[in-house]
Image (cartoon, rainbow, N blue to C red; front, side, top):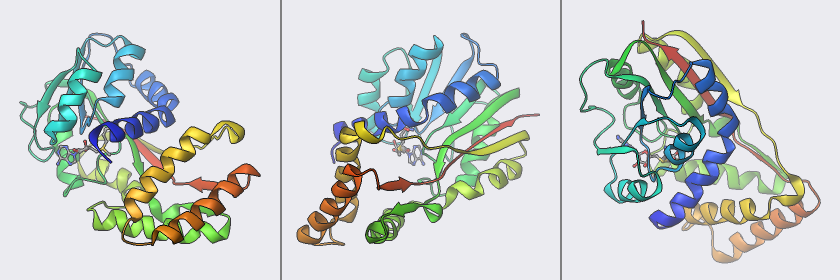
Length: 250
Ligand SMILES: C[S@@+](CC[C@H](N)C(=O)[O-])C[C@H]1O[C@@H](n2cnc3c(N)ncnc32)[C@H](O)[C@@H]1O
């Protein structure tokens, strides 16, 4: 998948977490003139909707990947964008009100160092948020014939460098980073059973990308057909528990 296809995927993921983001930003009391930074902002999918939803004016995004950042410059124009590594954030201590990430910690080499860096650059009394970190160890695939897809995709993601069970570690990471008033939870799931065709198509594009080399084209198309039929009769469940956490810097 190229960067544009990833942006479509990231935008889909941003929709899944829309109500959670709204709830958490309200809970931490986000104000329009707060300085807010997304670490690992990718193509700007979350920044874009955040700017629209919250009217925030002082929004920053940071990512390692220049190609993604150049798309973010187009997708989330007023945001200030920086190319840097989450392990060594190029900011002085305490200069943001809120620092957050979304589907990031599973991809970084050192999630604890990343959360500690996020904490360091947050002001006293400000908030660090991890909005979405999946845990593939708790994935539900139904019907049974499709369970193997889940195991293979987890292994494929591991080989791409992901810590696929990061979600369950979130609260401990926040404690180790010396955050306070920590709240953690799991994003619930809701499916529009009869209107999910576009999402289904996208899910398969990602799956085929992940499982290329694991299954032959014939095997993939057999599973795709089982999946499609299961969807048609409302039988298909694909649920990956996705954790969130918030913590205050004391
Ligand atoms: C799954 S994408 C999520 C993008 C965005 N947060 C979203 O939800 O749309 C993960 C992002 O983290 C970035 N990333 C991974 N490791 C990083 C690091 N060490 N420092 C900064 N960004 C990193 C990747 O380049 C990628 O853009």
